[in-house]
Amino acid sequence: KVKIVNNPTSIRNVSEKLYSIKYEKYMPNTLFSQNISEIKKFFRNHKKIILKPVNSFSGNNIHLISKFNLKLIKKIIKKHDHIMCQKYLPKISMGDKRVFLINGKICGAISRVPKKGSFLSNMSKGAKPIKTELTKTEIKISNLIAKDLKKNDIYFSGIDFIDQKLNGDINITSPTGLKTFYDLTNINLAKIFWECLGA
Image (cartoon, rainbow, N blue to C red; front, side, top):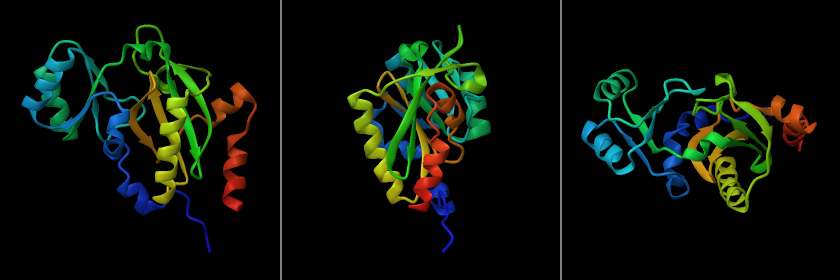
């Protein structure tokens, strides 16, 4: 009778980056690969891309490349195996949006603006959190993902948007920002988290 929040089997099955391939049409152009030729072709098509190891977190080991760097790419592949390559979205300078999903529903969102000279919106990397509202497009995509994750026994998660596009991270192991949301809005999502558990 004990409730299990974010079922361990589901955490194993819902890879935080690879799972987002289900929602590819809502994302910037994205490639998951360890093939140098494929990555080079992707770079040629987009001129400026973001590289993310599929198993990293908190903005660590993320690179923005505007000049093809074979040495760097080989180094990342050797250490992390597959890379998530994504078309760079310049509007990241205005911030991303972290959406909090609890029990299949949208419960709130914050925006995180990178510090000057950075493209990383993680607060651990110096980004500044501010209040935000979701667009109709973001609400539609968030509801779709929230319902899907609930079916997969994921009770609490965080997803991110840049310029109304899903950035591809489905945060289920440690979705951060509830305290920040409370500081900005005086709305306690932790209370909602526990109330929904008891429902």
